[in-house]
Length: 157
Ligand code: FES
Image 1: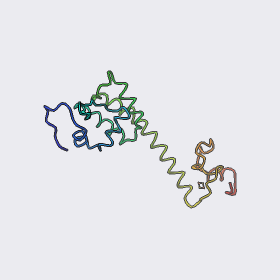
Image 2: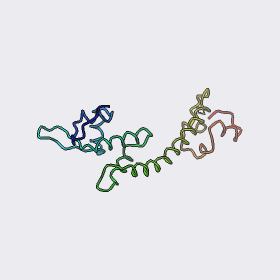
Image 3: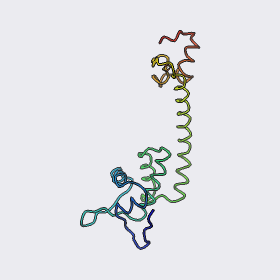
Image 4: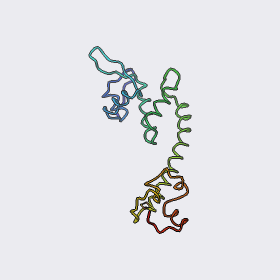
């Protein structure tokens, strides 16, 4: 990544993109979503303060672990005076997000196990297939094939 001389306090979108590794379109998207902001020059060009680099790094790191943009925006908005997240901010937020990530991994493991039950089945039955009917309370106890075993069913849902 190209270095930006210390004396430069504002970055063009191209510089921000090159330095952060985020595509220009992604930076425009982040701005549209209120994650970063810029000022406009008289020629209507965007200029970002240098600390935007850290904000972009924060957003990208959070996105990599699957944190939704809305959650990232909320976290940034809660910082006093919407300051750029410090090392301590990131430590605190990443700790909180870790438990969300653990929960998501658990859900994905559950889905994977249910998918295993579906392989070679193909019924997609609302009564028996947990992936077809994920909100089914019975589904919480296990995959459809287990339900059929419990009921002594014949597999015709
Ligand atoms: S397809 Fe999911 S249990 Fe049959």
